[in-house]
Length: 264
Image 1 (tube, rainbow, N blue to C red):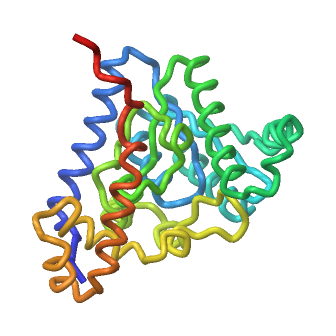
Image 2: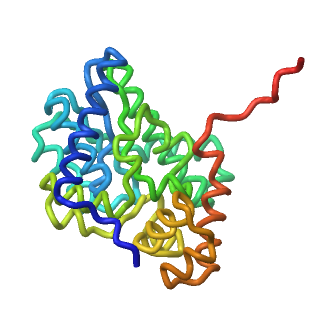
Image 3: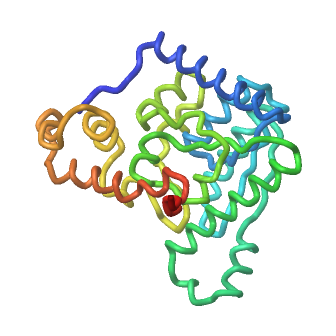
């Protein structure tokens, strides 16, 4: 499988590049800091570490937004990250909001995808409620691997002002996290969006992140054809085609909503 790891010098360059980016975004917007959701996972944890390094702890407000399906261990990890970084944090239960939505529209109650996406969108509402009130930006915590195949909720975790780690593949997120001092038990946790019970990223996508990263780097983001990428990576061409299909099907999530071309 393709090795996407950075050298130590490259890791430090990316650390500086991302922290500079965060400072530039805040300065350009003329705001007082940032808000980000903390899930206890590696992506939000790395983003928090870099944001605190860039802006100082007081300028980074973390939100832990558990739902009924949230694992207590993950939520505890999220709070621990905030406390370790000495940043302000609020814990807000979102399930009462979800229950209110389903009382208004009970037809969706058994649709775990629709309800799961609603959880992500309710979290986005809380992120922006706090950000607007405190004059802050909302930091995204998504990586390139997720963005490329649409593994995020449109107007949910995709509703942010900027994506500090948005150009890093999942393997590179783990590597940079180790470089900046994220605890190893958080680096190696099984990734989950936790929008419904027992969900894991890799099971839902149908392939592991190492394979996904390699196909993205060589084919979707890289120069190789699907057949050449399959040969180079020693994977089935069908797997490469699946990733390509996910990328194309999710293009609408990565663009602004379309409008008709203006008439002459």
